[in-house]
Image 1: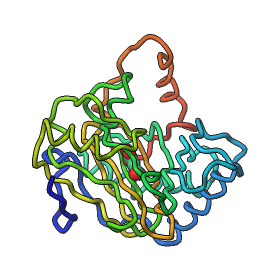
Image 2 (image 1 turned 45 degrees about the vertical axis):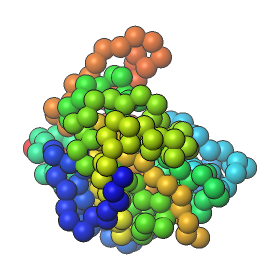
Image 3 (image 1 turned 90 degrees about the vertical axis):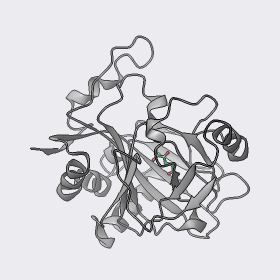
Image 4 (image 1 turned 30 degrees about the horizontal axis):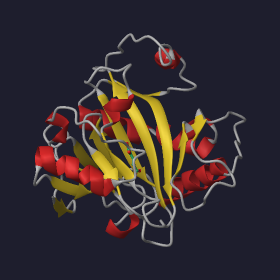
Length: 261
Ligand SMILES: O=C(O)CCC(=O)C(=O)O
């Protein structure tokens, strides 16, 4: 595999990801980051709970801290994900008439021990059986400076055009084993690191393979992950556990529309 850093920009259609110019001020970013820290510690200033916690107070502080829909719990985090300039920039990048935030996560990565900070290769679509393939994207907002040593999100250009690969998963920390799968099916694939300054944003399509490695720095690497759909997205009717999951698209207090033409 070939590693590169984003000295050039990438094309969302061809490469499956791109980098946006800075959107958020340092103040907005820092205030959202401190809101997220409160949420991590169980303080929900709005009185609303996150959708799901994958890390509880008292758990290993060196593990990745992932909490779903933190934008419900704190006004600074809500303001970040509903920012008008952000909505407009996402619409421009995806050439969309409408942008709706339908899900979010904080992925807070403290300094790692061993593979504790690894997030396995995956494409977001593999977790979303209730969505079709078009019009589904993720914006990754850097809430700390993110460099090679802090475990940036890494993308494989063009992997949005690949067929699905078996054996890859966000929660699998064995990146060495997963690299072998990538090597077997797409040997020599390029890997681009999303090195971002605080307040900068990357966008990737739901079909783009991405992962992240250890944070070797002392400071936490903080990403606010915003999953959004455009007017091209199509809901798929499914049965079972997630049958009603997307009913929340009707509730703007959970899934705000942040841009409309
Ligand atoms: O923040 C990370 O390291 C992984 C994020 C991720 O998987 C995503 O943005 O879809």
